Length: 454
Image (cartoon, rainbow, N blue to C red):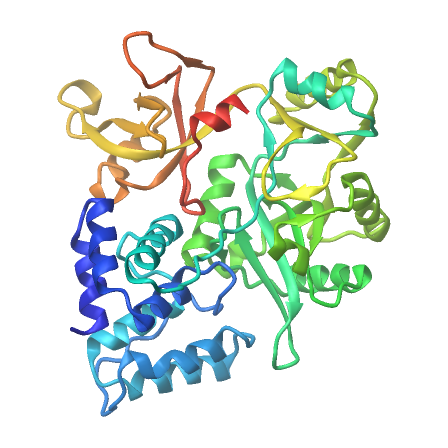
């Protein structure tokens, strides 16, 4: 059975447990490599689209391309890279293998399997068959706790300094700056879950390279921050801005839209420490180093607006100013916190409204009135099954037409809400005044009840 047929069959199975069982039965070294190439967030090819080749006289099969795929992951994307991809496609015998090669190097196998599902497969295969396949690592991301008086007290009970920063309302991202095996320099952009954001902006790349050189880490640097869209000197509203940024995730962004992108950064991590998911340098030292190297610099990168505070009242004062300016809120950080892949108890967001990312479980079509034949609501659920809510507001008239499409079932969407509702008649929790914000193409997992409790 060809590997392309196996991938197709996985995609036709709707239930996660069915996919897992089928993959366990068919897992071997080659199938493992195919999924690892496509899912591993640390393996990227800088290729979002591949020109179609409809016929060839080749004799190779997909297994023969693994060396080329390894080579692609270690070089900068260029015209030579494109030609290597095209040569590989011509050398493949079967059309199905050409499609599979395309899906591997564009990192989308189109079969509904993400890292968490694949790792579950690997655990079962290793247990049942005595193999030693390695799990795929997830993309590290340091998160803030949701607001609560308890967390605020904990932050200020721990020795400072304390930094209060503007909470930007764009797309969380990492800029990874490192050297390639061929001696060239490489800047890659990723969303918080490790999905690559395809931005071809030479000016932005050069500025990140310059910052990396000033930091002088031999293995490269990861910058942490938020991408915003700036039009005519003003930050675009979230829906407009993230619409453009999501086209970067999908690889369809235009050159004109790329020029509108601005990066706000608040942290950096050496690439080697990032891969280890922890770094012991306190945040105050990291921020101070960033402030030092960015002093007097102007361009497409800026440092997040920051004030040093001493009390919760100071946080409230800055929060009130941000809200009056139309901003989303603030982030309060204890300067002694180290960087690690977790939700920090010493960093907290303070917002006017709360947000949550949930999975679309079902689309409800309207049966009367202005929503007749259009989207009436999205039924949404968290991946742990503990939050379930029907969202019927926040949609524009265009949204109600666009999103009444079953291809959106299973995708992640951001919802704004005012509070969590604990209904005594059911185990799951719901949300008070839920409003749809946007589809999140840059995310693969939802928030859970533990995120809300944090």
